[in-house]
Image 1 (cartoon, rainbow, N blue to C red):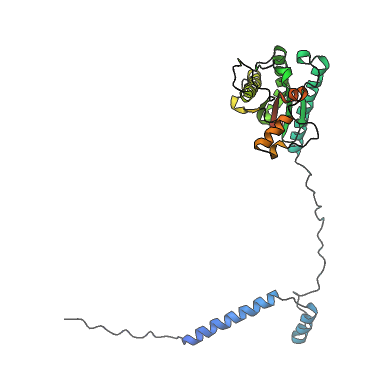
Image 2 (cartoon, one colour):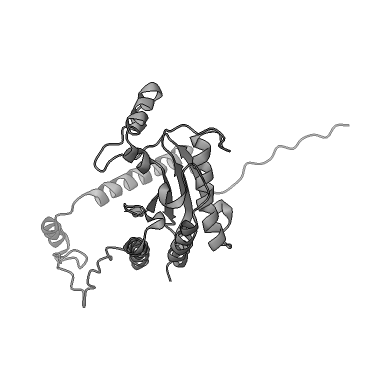
Length: 281
């Protein structure tokens, strides 16, 4: 027999109509709206004081004329140094490295350049990110050869000794080999000037490896430039990078027309790349 469901009695006690709860919420929101408007408004202290005095006959303590703040012993403004002391020390050490290399070559030229040839032993260039050392091949190699001359071996060993104390400032060493446009002679053990420039770059790298055995070979980047990057005179714009094809080839040949031009094109370039994060003790 099914059970009959008993009707539940309506709850007794005080209650309010639904409309009254909605009305109360609306009034609360309107009040909040006007409070926000008041908070965003600019209060006229004089008018407010007149209103309060008219209603209560007294001046509220929360509203008063603004007074300048009196802060005892205000802190002085400390200006930030123009440069980090660590950066200044690193820049100084980098400049000293360049100066030491410059003095080294000046002393070498004052005695006897390798091979007894006339002309500068090296061209140096200083930059905040790298130091470039350009060595003419005639001081390092015999014609069409890639093994260092005997006196060039001593020169490279002494040069590495100058760089050794600041090896921690380097992130790597780039070594470029360059040649002129004269074709490779018959019986040469290399195919072309490109391979000759690479072998000469490797020879210079080996000089570093012998003097600095703790530095891995991967620290050095040997780049064969061959005959494609002739040296231009000081002040001359390097137009080769803007040309290609036959135009670039004509430009290269125009910088290999004299023996003097060919001699300055045969060179090895050592680039000491600075590590910007190196710490100087």
